[in-house]
Length: 314
Image (cartoon, one colour):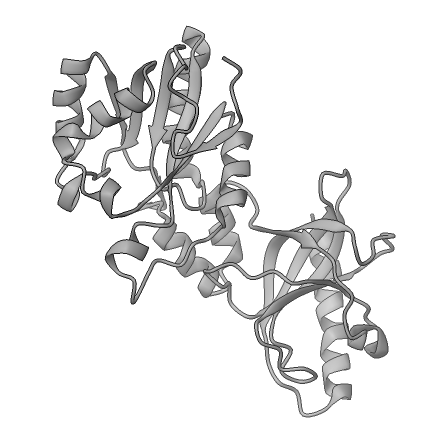
C-alpha cells in the first residue's frame, strides 16, 4: 500500500503489512531524549527494509487527567509532526487521547496496537514509559506481552545534559525563564516560530525600526522579552539576523494576546503575506514599559547593537 506521511487514529493502516518499527510517546518538543528513542526505530527500519513510524497522542493526556492544570505544549501537533519527519520517520500516527483509549488495560495495550497495525514488528519507548489504565503498564509489561505476540521491545535510557535528564518539563522551564540557549541545547535544534507575516500598526516603522509581525503564540509561552534571532522565508535559503520581540509591547500597545515581531538588521525583501521561520538564538533583555517613546527608541537602538555583536561573532 502507498504509505501516507501521517494518519489520525490509525486510519487506513490495516492493510500495512511491511514490518513496522514503532516509537511511542507524546514527544512534545522532539528533543534529544526523544530522538534517541525515535532514531532507534528509524535505523532498525532502514536496516530491515521496514517502515519507521511514531505513535503520538493529541491532546496531551493531562487534558484528560488534569483539565484544570494541563501541561502547556512546546509545539502544536502540526509542528511536532513536521519535526518527526525531519528526524527521518516514514509515518506519524496521531492518536486522539480520550477516556476510551486511556482505559485500555496495560496487558491488552500491545494487542490493541497489533490489531491496528498488523505489520508491527517492534516498539521503541523511553525507559520511563507508562501506559494503560491507571498508567499501570511499564517496560516489563511490554516485554511480557511482546514475547507472546512476537513483537520486539526496545527501551532507551534517558539522555542527560550536565548530569540532569533531558525532558520536556525542563525545556518548558528554560523557555519560561528566557534561557533560550539552554532550551536549544536540550532540543538539539534552535527553537523557532513559523507563520505568516501580517500587516501591523506600523509603530515600529514610526520609531525607525520597522518590523515583520507574526501572530504566533504557543501554549507554553517563552519569557516576554527581546531576543537575538535569525529568520528567513519558510523553506528558503540564507538566514537574516534580527532582533525579535515577544510580548505585549506595554509602552506602545499593551497587546493581548502576545505576539512576535522581528526587526531585520539588513534588507530582506520580506513583507506581509510571506511565511517566515524565526529561530531564537539569545536572550537580550526582558520586556519592560518605558517612560517615553524616546526612551524606548534609545533602548531598541542598543538592542540592535547587541544583536549585531552576536551576529558578528557567529
